[in-house]
Image (cartoon, rainbow, N blue to C red; front, side):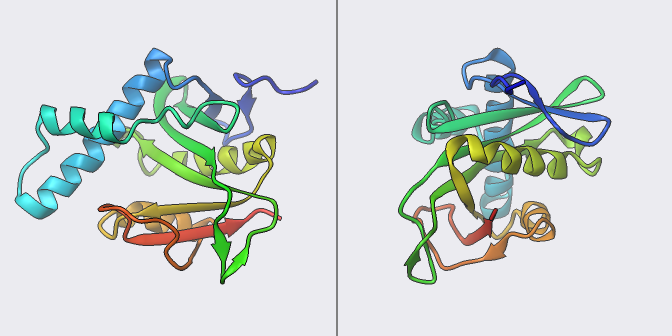
Amino acid sequence: MPRTPEAPYAAAPSWTVAARPVTDPVAATLLREYMTDVADRYYRLHEGRDATHEEVERALREMPSDDLAPPDGMLLVARHNGDVAGCAGLRRRDGCTNKGRKSKGHTGELKRVFLRPGKRGLGGGAALLAAVESAAGRLGVVRIVLDTRRDLVEARALYARHGYRDVPAFSEGPYAEVWMAKDLV
């Protein structure tokens, strides 16, 4: 039986992961929590304070998640023992290179990987990455790339544990400091 966009992907027994529209209230809440979390961490590191409400709202406007919607993207929502726990997005991004060569097939970009603080360390990151990689085929994605900040050490460690390796820069922006990729085939 074919999987529908809302059908769950395989995950650890206490984890379920399913695609949800970015406009879904649960998804929208998670995306706001993600932005608040990364903004707070940024401002704590650089200015010794949390992000203001206005700064989070501006970041949500300037970096919308609408590209994590079909037909070229998806947002996956994770639940732990039935409780909403986190999210991860994937969007098709053609034209990325691997050591100066065009990548085979389509390249996807991992975005908005987030777990609520009380759900961290329980295997949710692994469940989200496995679900994203499993779902990547629906977008024709055979290589996943990502960019992140140096200070997001937990995320970088998660990616490395799951086979993502450092690659040359493929994007620009004030928050792109580390670039990683994983070939799925």
